Length: 393
Image (cartoon, rainbow, N blue to C red; front, top):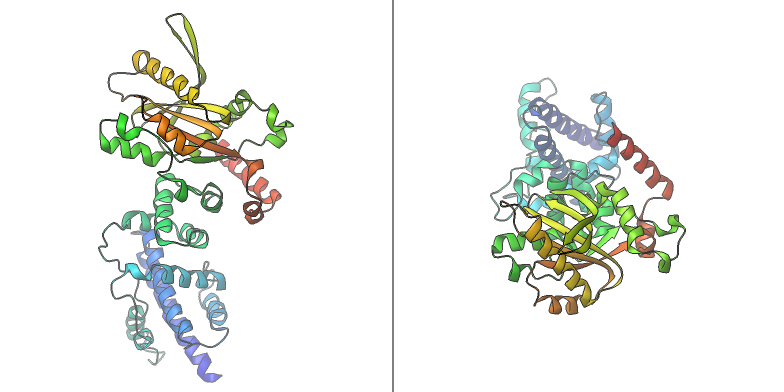
């Protein structure tokens, strides 16, 4: 028992020294320094627990003693220390020569307590912090820019490395909250729906880089979870495009966030008179990243070829009458309840304007298994209320 206490005290001294040294450098790069610290502590804990160098209850004991010796310390509870281990073990492949010997971890542990400076130097080396290699195609800047809690939410909800990297980039670009992130990964499933929307962008957008950018921007299916038909008190057959559209307009911020960054709302039921004929465009946006107007046509039913013809007419009118000299040609997206996407992609080939076809679901149509994974309704309402208050502030 006495040997265990000395061993744990040594661990406490090593971790405490690393914390104090890290806090002194934190002003330079707070988030990066925090990630590096947590990675190093995670490595240290992983090596000692996975190799059974520590006994049962070691993490609990170390956490308790850390908080006793550093009053007011936050973020080093038992679950947090375990999350640091998860973080290291998930990303240990990104660091050159990541494995570290137990002997190196405990270097300096037998120093006398009075030799604090010498022990401090040795203990600082014992927890070797994150040192990233220059890995090709690894989003280093994005990795270091997002919070530790975002990293943990990604690791909890996405299991494959490529999927995790996708959501790291997503968090860097779109800044979702840690409360929203699990739902984005599990319910919207952005990763598995990217690049799959049937479209003719490569054939109709001359600049292939712009074409690929447009392809990456849109998914093949969207969850419009801010539209709840049950709350509207209507049955499916009673809900037409105007009802869905009015809810989208009412929740336009959520709609824009659903589709991604760079969108600004231009209007709904936008009227154009062309040669004496009236045309009403459901939803009109402008996307700064694409430098294009984007049309969304809503259809509460299955995809029909006629929808493409209607969309093509709108795009022609916008191109002739609304497009400015510095802008690219407009893009159109059909949003419908159901679609044979292979068929839609085939038919679309003969249309000259850039367009795509995507489907959508509403909150009441979610998979029951996914609904089980969601927090209780009361918790979702609480998060929504708090988010609304922040928006108003």
